[in-house]
Image (cartoon, rainbow, N blue to C red; front, side, top):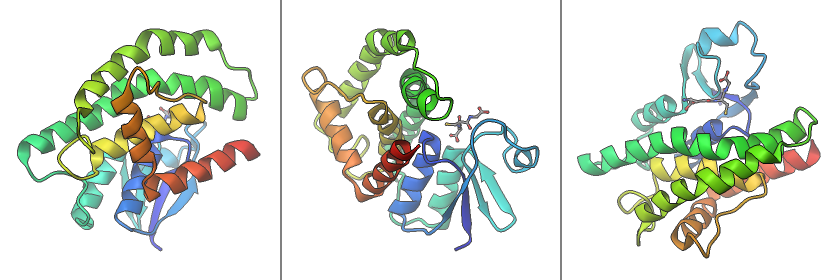
Amino acid sequence: MSIIIHGVNASPFVRKVRVALAEKNIPYELKPQVPFGQPPEYFKISPLGKIPCFQDGDYTLPDSSCIIAYLERTNPKPALYPENPKEYGRALFLEEYGDSKLSETLGPVFFQRVVRRVIFKQEPDETIVRKKIDEEVPKVFDWLESQIGDREWLVGTRFGIADLTLGSQFANFGHAGESVDAKRWPRLSAYIERVHARPSFKALIEEERQGFKAA
Ligand SMILES: N[C@@H](CCC(=O)N[C@@H](CS)C(=O)NCC(=O)O)C(=O)O
């Protein structure tokens, strides 16, 4: 096994890459690298200091979006990006939306409820959590609900980059003890269940849950 992913399994960006690797059936090793207190050597392979970073021999590549785009070229099947130009553009935007807006909205809920408790042994600040859930989540979920419509997957007819990006962010929402209200957002709720039922997601979510329990 020559591929190494530097990172930790709680990161939604690391999970994106791990799901892509699982979908493409590519073996790899996860090498623990926490996203704080990074040693100076880590900045040589990941100049922003962020996780994940990919390594295959002396080839290194940071950033989940760059890594998955690279994997699509080295291991094209099954494809995670649509062929059709319009669908391709839509898939890239949904990936960006997941990595930015959705991450900014759901990430702090996970940080307060899981990272603070498990890593820093502190109580969560529920004021921050409530503000996110009551004020920001509804707008984001309304938009996602409108994008799903009657589709099985967000773009085209196959599971791909948009689905694995959104699914990764929602996995952390689940780890924080939250779920999508199926009465208010029925399509989004069923869609996230569908994404998380894929073997690539299911195995990781279970592994992560066990890790949080043990910590
Ligand atoms: N655009 C990056 C974002 C990665 C990212 O923000 N990772 C967080 C952990 S979830 C991190 O490493 N934060 C540490 C830092 O910002 O110094 C990607 O897609 O890989």
